[in-house]
Length: 558
Image (cartoon, rainbow, N blue to C red):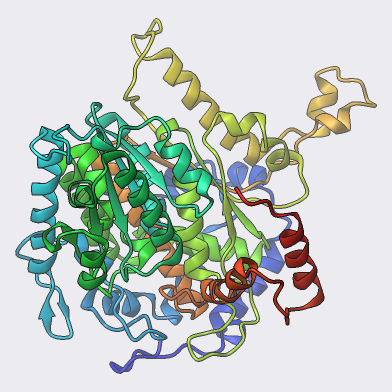
């Protein structure tokens, strides 16, 4: 990255020595099968692994050799990964197009730590907000905070979009086991009125608290939903004054918040150096803190920090986020994989793939380098996935026998939070079945089943080709002891830093998101044209004009 502190700018990536060495290495070993790699190196499963912050990473089933790893680490050195890690933690303006630091790591820095942004230690500010959040969360959880009519809050609705929604809803679902069950959290992000209507349909406004999350308090979708929620609340409670007891804000726009009817003391702020998709551990996570309490929220922050410290100080060859990031580069740029499947074998992590979609694709879905030059290589993979074992009965067919190469991340826990029937060994039989599927799937993807093996089992020769599995499908396995706030925080930080590592290699800005702007800007004009009483003169392309005219003709007023 190009900064005032003179971090070196790597040479053109694809013509660089390290990249060329990887290209030659891949050409030489491209036909090598994982069966062969394991046969020639029976101990690779014990060697190609790393551990940090309670997480164990097994990457032996990736299509790499020791030489592949050595060359990938050389690429990381060439691209200055260590220097860029140091620059991020220093608070340098590594978000170059917006001239901002990307210092989400400060959100989980322990009290007493010093983190400077423009010469100012931001840690005291962070902890001041955390204390205010804790006091508010405790008041709601204990029943001390009462609604306008004196009722206790039973439902918290988070209104946001993007990073103001995806992080909180993912973490709430992930940590539901630790939540206070007499308070339910719901989440509204889609500007489709159905989202808000269904979220409030069965609720008593007197028992409902809305948390409106918008840094600028101008986000169109969020404010549209917030005003609709305000109208619903006032209609039930009969008084505009009710807003003050049923709405709080996470924002930096005190004037806009006050105009809405929210008192300044009920506004929780954050900072320009926190990007939306990196903000779930800021005040954006207020709904989560209400659900699980300040102590458990603090445990989650400690998990984040543990992985931060590992990423910051561990040599690249043992660094979990760096290793995962380099594997993503290998799979994307050398194996030609266009997608990445994330497969948590934990129902609580059902929203984790959706969260990673924004984290990964909004961060690294870029087509120009830091200097504005067009890239001549693929950047972000498309991220998708579902919890196991559900996915096994849906899209695993393609993973095993389809034509695309789809690298997979399997995520699991050695202990269940919800034990059921014990087997003969005294362990939870249902959890054993879940994890048996986890391990079996990684084995099947790697090694497959040859035609010879299928025929040896007595299969009909005409059917046998349909029952073969070519294997050689790459996967990594991530294991932790159990799902806790600490392990979730560490897991999210692992992926955050992995995404950053990929961005450094690709020489792109992982912290801006200009690509979300154009459609939003155009929608502003289009919305006015759709709302016009008389048919406006349209000046879009013929397709857009025709669609808009058809919509206006078929639209029915409610």
